[in-house]
Image (cartoon, rainbow, N blue to C red; front, side, top):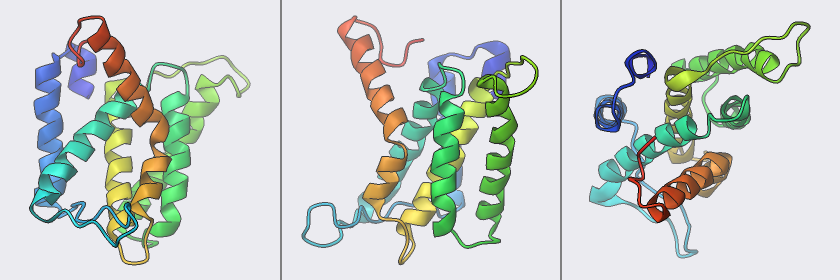
Length: 186
């Protein structure tokens, strides 16, 4: 994300980097979506051999969703703050992920104060690709950990926590396709 902010990397380079980050989380860290929960009412829907590819798609998709929703001052940060705050009760307090997410929330507060003109002075802070993609990455990591834990967050609830960025991404891609443009074009 930081390199993209500096050098305006193309969509293919960004996608390769995002897939690399998703592979690191999934294969390197063992963070995998193995079950979608009881979405159809007939018991848990386990992904089996499709777990890793589905997880990679989810990670890359959510990274991009937060990057795309970062068009209005404070929107990505506000949605991220709500999602992160909703995740914390479902994660083990004191775990490394819990502490990282608390740190991200603490960083979002002054960012939102500036971008929503809530402070004494006038300031704007640019989240950029580095910030928005990091938020997406941290949130999807937390969502997977919380939704795959026994007695954790229901997977469908995890989707609701990020519904705004996901719906926005689908709408943007749909508009681009209707206009005859590539769905990943700027």
